[in-house]
Image 1 (cartoon, protein in one colour):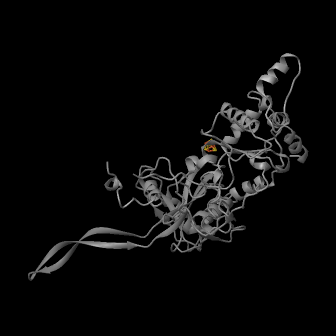
Image 2 (tube, protein in one colour):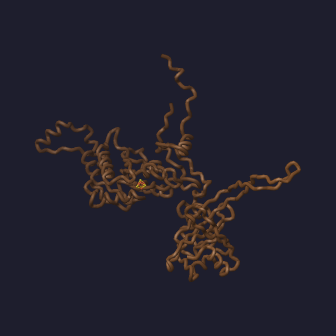
Image 3 (spheres, chains in turn cyan, blue):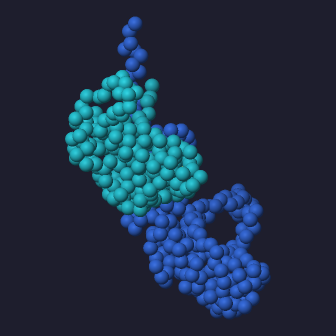
Length: 218
Length: 219
Ligand code: SF4
């Protein structure tokens, strides 16, 4: 995320009039904004972090392989280092023993970074929700952009989530009040790593991040 | 394979002093087992492995069992003086069995293609890290499984080469597979709770409003 891009973006404070743009396009002049160009580049080259946690990882591997071919969407470059990754696909069961490592990997990824929670386990603990050793959803510790339900989700579902993420990236603003979160100075890009406690992880969830839906009672 | 009684008799002649008990299993599985005493367990295991007839060279599975304290009621006929006459009266007596933990080994023979022989070890009590002899020196395949029992049941295997927790983290203090284990309460939100889970989730629900609100609504 270069500083230069943001400065160039400020030139295009005013959004381009759609009518003018199509008029220009008809005459063979292609006009775009810095923001569009920048997001277009970003969304078509998302490098996922290469790691899998359980059975869902097999589907993720299938998605990256030739039959489903994640490369069609620019996501085939799985990086073995968090320093080079844009996207964390949490594919599988997150055990409580593994959770601190996941948060640490997330913290080591450079901004802008995105998270897909793949499968029932990563969303909520899935079939192991009532167990003693499985984290009840990775969103207790890190922010999640796209959730994919399923046990396991099919490769098509992961592709769908990937396209959903691309749409999300495409809509991110570079300037103005509603600019993307990662561009704001006050946004945290690191989250506290939970510690191994005597009975559970400490804390069991990040209270600033995790707000379970309240049960309404009449 | 020989019957358990025959095996027991041969062990007792070969390993002097060994106290072996045949534990029946009246369930549909009908898989009786041998209960070994702590002192001679390793010697008996060596015998089972090296004996040319048994050759139980493969320990396929080691698992733990938790038996809580229990009282068994039974009816006994007692002679009593009733109104000056001696009569036989039925009485219920309660017998108390203190709880214990067990490690159960399933042994097979690759050489003779027979098995399984089920062997049990029983702890004295259900204390934290209550001891049992380790059979890892006899069957190397027991190493990780004994570590798992140590982790989940809290049995300390004496003479185990590398006894550490294997699934839970080192700082963890509970034994999740014991029957009196209570998991940490993190049931803030359950989309479809029922039974036990519903009871747990209810503790996190906001309190019911005392005033129903309906009284205050005036049309
Ligand atoms: S959601 Fe299902 S398939 Fe995916 S990791 Fe969990 S159990 Fe495995």
